[in-house]
Length: 66
Image 1 (cartoon, rainbow, N blue to C red):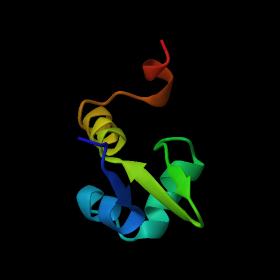
Image 2: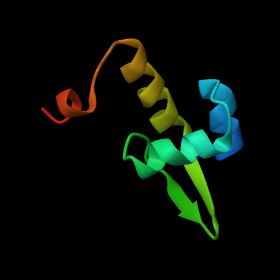
Image 3: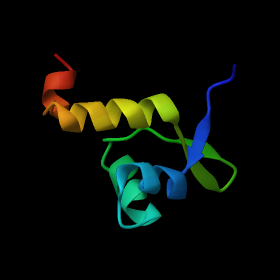
């Protein structure tokens, strides 16, 4: 089964973020990888789940790289 790509609006719903703009800010800050398809950004479901788990268990960006 191919990996599912989510829109910023769908990710915002999963993260309970205020808007798709908040998702784009996470991507711009390097906290959530995204894939540009045409003019739109999309996000792999696994990357979103990893982000949620890292936030839940308190893993910070500098700890992920060690």
